[in-house]
Amino acid sequence: MQYYPYLLMFVVFDVVGMFLFAWGISFSKLPLDVSFLVLLFIVLLAAPLGYALNLALHRENW
Amino acid sequence: MVSLPTTPAELLPFIIAVVTSHTFITIVFFPGFIHIMLVVMFLTWYERKVLARIQLRIGPLYAGGPGGILQPIADGVKLIFKEVMIPYKADKFLFIFVPLALVFSAAVPFAVIPFGAHWVIANLDVGLVFVFAMTSLFPSMILIFAWASNSKYPFLGGLRSLFQQVAYEIPMWISALSVVLLAGSLSLVDIVNAQARIWFAIPAFLSFVVFFISIMAELERLPFDLPEAEPELVAGWYTESSGAIFMVLFLALYMKLYLMSSMVTVLFLGGWWGPGFLPQPFWFIIKTLIVATFIIIPRGVFPRIRVDMLIRIGWTRLLIIAIANVFLTVLMLNSGLLAAWGL
View 1: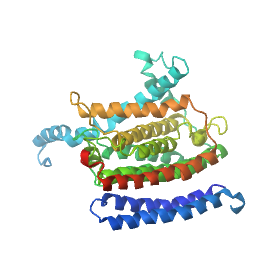
View 2: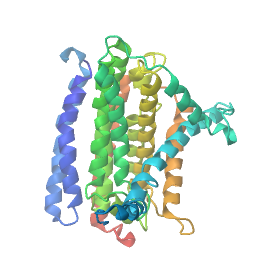
View 3: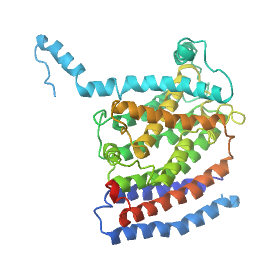
């Protein structure tokens, strides 16, 4: 059970990945500021990702 | 489109028209069933031969043909005539059903892989997502099979397989996202057409590396073959399978190897593009076999890594590199660096 948090992270990033594909195909038609918002969203995801990875290291939580 | 026969006299022309139609030929012969079966049989022999050369052995030799190339047929006959042993407390339905479902989910994505400009069964608009969706059935199917065999080593192997494939699926998707950004389409035919002047392995080199490592983990190849780790878990998640069931599982795994190698070719190595003096499918298959060789070679070279290291590498290093490459691709597209190649 010590690798369980990675599965929870997968559930989040699976959905995010799918929506990023939708952004990817319409990238050339979108104005740049819309793409900027999407990229900002990816950057903002980095902090929770790091926190989740840090928590996943603590086996006593799981 | 052929009209349905109404009288018995029209039956024979109808059958001839169906059999010679492009759709029938693509489904049954060339990118379809017979071609995939032949290549998968060849790949099982080829892997053993490559590993033997690395370890200074001869490898399969006595089964007939040049270099024992008929070895897969000998293996197939042997496995078919062996008794299928199903463990007493195993779930019999799932134990038989899941191998078939695995072959299905490995074979169906070939319908959207373009082996040439006209050698594709179905040009889906969402071909890339379709391939990823079908291959992401694998971890859950493997876990179900491992659980159904009701034995501790298969279950441990199945859990490891689930964690590993789930950890490497996201880097694989995000690295394919750079290709989607460059090509502006999810259709595999459009993606290959966009590479007419430059292979995406050059502008999206980091993605190429991440994608290659991720498919090695998805395919459970060394150094990521923890789900089958022979010294720890007898044979991993297929320990309890035998005879025809083992053969079907083996078929599914090698089909997935061929599928993932052809995905690398489609996304990064220019698909069917090559010098024009040979037909397009030839270049595609040559590139795919070269990629498959590079997937096979580490099996004779590298040791296995630890499971927690494996999962953390997928989530920290590869995911960060893949996301960084998305930013790099956006930057390159906006700065007009790639305008010379029509991107």
